[in-house]
Amino acid sequence: MRVVIRRHLLVIAVALLGSLGGCATPPPADDQEAITDFNETNDPIEPTNRAIYAFNNGLDTVIMRPAAKAYRFLVPGPVRGGIHNVLSNLGTPVQLSNDMLEGKPRRAGDTTMRFLINTTVGVLGIFDVANNWGYQDHDADFGMTLALWGLPGGPFLFLPVFGPSDPRDAIGLGVNAAMDPFTWVGQGAAVRALDWSRFAMNGLDQRERHLDDIDSVKKTALDPYATFRSLYRQHRQAQIEDVLNDKRATVPVWFPESSTPSTVIYSPSVSPNY
Image (cartoon, rainbow, N blue to C red; front, side):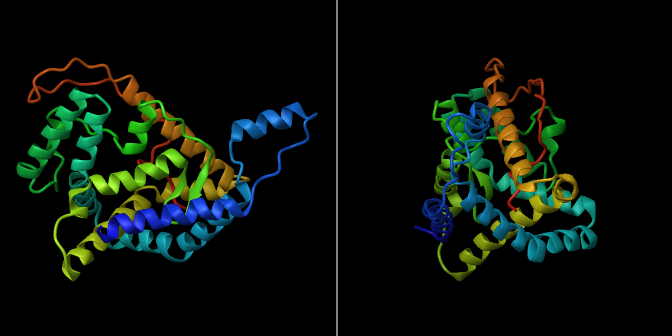
C-alpha cells in the first residue's frame, strides 16, 4: 500500500486514539439549557480537539500562512488559477467514483466531460474550458457519499493537519486515497516525490485561496475554534444538500444542462486545517 494511504490512515488513527485522552464534562442534569447546547455542539472530546487545533494553528502560523502569503506574492493570479485547475483535474477520478456511488449519473456525466474537455482543449487541465461550455464543477467525496447512504456524521473531530472533521469524513479521507489511481500507479523515489509534491501543492493552493477568510475569522471571532467548528458543519451540510437537491434529468453526457446553484454558507472547498 502506497505512502499516500499510509499517511491518511496514520493521521486518522492518531486523531481517533488521541481523542481518548480527554472528554468534555457534561453539564449538570438540572441545567436543561446547558445540556441542549452540549448535545447540539456534539463535541464530547472538546479538550483533545482544542489541543489538536492549537497544534494545527501553530503549524499554520509558522509554516502554512507564511508560505501561502509568499505564494500569493510571487506567483501571478492567472498562474495560480492554472495550478488550481490542474490539481482539480487530477482529482477527477475520485470525484467521478463518488458521483457514481452517490447515484448521480448526471453529475458523473458532467465530471467525465470536464475531464475530457479540460485535459484536451484545456491543455492538461490548465484552463477550465468545460465550465464555460456548461459543465460546472461540483463537490464529491466519500464522506458525502456516506452521508447520502444515511450514515450520520457523529461527534466533531479536529484531525492533525487536516483540521475539522467527524468520524464519517475521517473514514472518507482514507477511502478517497484508496480511490485515487495515483495511490497505486508506479513505484520509487520519483513517484513518491510527485505524491508529496501534489499533496503539498493542494494544501498550499487551498490555504492561499482562503487566506483572507481565515485571517478574518481569527481576527474577529471571540473563539476561533468554535467558529471553525460551526462553519465546517454548515459548509458540509450545504455540500450534502446540494447533492440531494440536484435532481436534473439524465441526458446525453455531451449535452450540457445547467443546474441551479445552491447557497453555500461557507466558501472553502476543503475545511480549514488550523
